[in-house]
Image 1 (cartoon, one colour):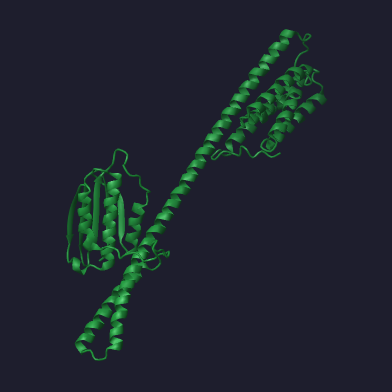
Image 2: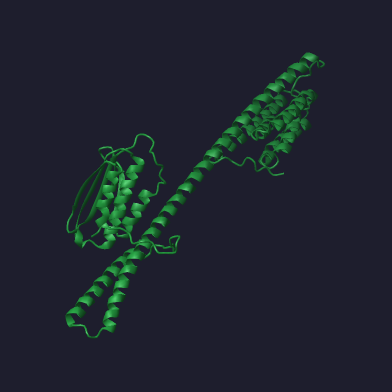
Length: 399
């Protein structure tokens, strides 16, 4: 029956198999050389047929090791019998038993270990190979010494095999754990990107719906009121043109992002999102909550700032303040907002690295969301530890 319990451990490679086969073949060559030496010395033992049988059985045992993963127990039995009948297959028998021990099934190890000890003690006295000299009749002392030696060898091989199996299991477990961690991290990143894009899409839906409704309302006035003076017609047309242009700008910024149609539990659409004018209230709320914020703001002509840019600035500042509160509780945070039409908006946040455990755990997708927001507007986002040892985040939006 195939054995799928212990596949090759990750990173094991071919070298362990190569050197094991190499030792088995080396042992076979040494025995063959010993036979040749004895034959050239003129010793009639062992007879030529016995030599051929011994070497053939040894080669068969080495070739059979390729099935050690498919039939580990059967191969252990066969190589054990070959090992006591054929001197050249001795190392292959030890290898088969050690491989069986890597499974770390103690009932199996004890049972086959006893079989090896009994087989080695009984059949070794037959001396089929003829390499050993004729000895005196077997005594109880010789039997005890031979059995004790077999037990020591079996115990040593079982210990080595169990250690190798435990190490393989550990490497396999660490490999599986690393793969699982990578899959989870990839899933978190994908979920964070999808959630952030969906949230941006919902915000864009609210703004576009508001502007298009204004365009529709003013266009309806022009369609049904033919008594308006030219000045008022031009004013309404200007409003329609301005809102249409803003809608197209915001629509181009969001093209390509995915959106899932989500509504609040009561079936009503979500409320319009805050903009740049609410950044001051956001910082005031953080101060009232006890957060230590030092804010430097130099935004020129904020009244000219597009609604889309202002809304993203608000969300970025909100995320920076929230991240600092999560990952550096109680630490002082420096927040800088600099911008002007034609130059863009630079948002910089700095705070000391948190040495202890944060009070609130994070999902690890906050920076991903900031990067997504910056990319939607064609901006940039960078984060890391600066030269002063502080964690720094820099976001730039075009304006």
